[in-house]
Length: 323
View (cartoon, rainbow, N blue to C red):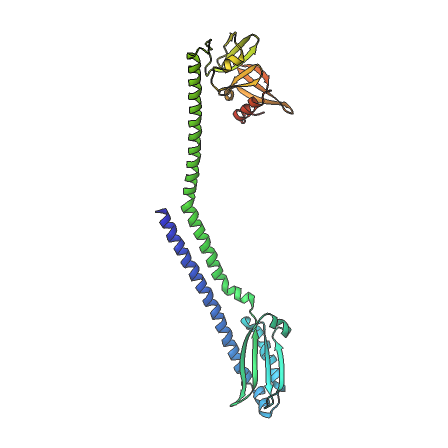
């Protein structure tokens, strides 16, 4: 159902883009038509001005330049036609050109306007039925004016895009969060399953060793043991409740028949890593030198950590209590 909603939203967004492009095209077309109407009006005024008609009637062209300059100055108020040039080419009645002038509205250089690829409009200069020459307008776009017309379209497209992206975020965001949560839960379950298999394997190993006579002694180790310290030839087992028990056994013998929850931090000390968060912390004493501080019933014991494996286990278990 969610993907159907997304598909409908995407189709709606596509329709909005098409509508915006259509509006953009219409706006540009309206500007072009308005520009053409303005130039038609200017050409009509030029052709029917008294100065131009009198000059054409008597066969002179002196007044054409003044009239063209006047019209170009007047279009300074026509914002859509601010940058333009006018060119008058009149003939002498034969094949040659007797008269040619160029004027620009913004005092720009004619060649510079030509380099901007202007839009060109041509009109005949006539008196009655006789054609005396050509009036050519060359216009370049006024970017400020055009951008003002396009701003609503641009805002519409930007707003519709933002709405569409927000729509996708609302629809797909919960799905992404849920998927990520499921992946994390799946990884946690796999880790728990792996630990369970490891514990079962260790238990079976202890049982097999006991049945085969490998374990010749019974060691009273359980989850309440915090650490075991060896001083030849005895090992002292320290419990969480403050009691301890001394046995004539080496740490190697203990390691061969206990669960993997114990780790050796130095040559003569084993610690229960599952109890560390309850009564232990790490203290840094210098470069590459750390001590494990164990507190049982208010009594503190400090041990230098010399085993690299033990150090890694302690950092992993006590990273929130480090220092």
